Length: 167
Image 1 (cartoon, one colour):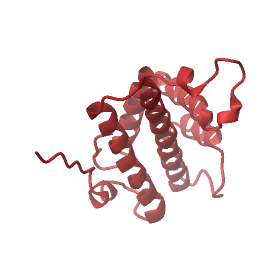
Image 2 (cartoon, rainbow, N blue to C red; image 1 turned 120 degrees about the horizontal axis):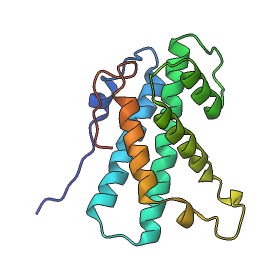
Image 3 (tube, one colour; image 1 turned 90 degrees about the vertical axis):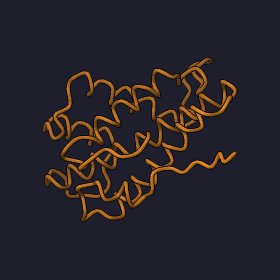
């Protein structure tokens, strides 16, 4: 039995993005998409402990947030809304939403904001109360919401020609 699994090739992912002048950023986004495919594959095909499953979900949300942040950066730069390289994710979200750059619904905007706050759990020491742990903070609904919003963003005509990948 051959149980070898391969993610979508980087070149196949890369050629779908509109931002041809941002090769390094697009490449890093594609590497991250490939990693999300791997994480999704692990969740779908392995019998894992709940702790490991939630850690995979945490990593998925953190990496997917980085993808969204990079895409928002490229969109804002392409529309000449920003000029500097260093800008906070929450500022990018505000710029994309305030300028209606991706025609996201108000519900989608709320999802992005809530997932951004969850992404900040990358800082393990940021727990504010006794049960404020990664295990208690991340769940399958968060995973599904992130997958859905990422697919919406990646399939936006301002971003890519076609949403490829099994995220």
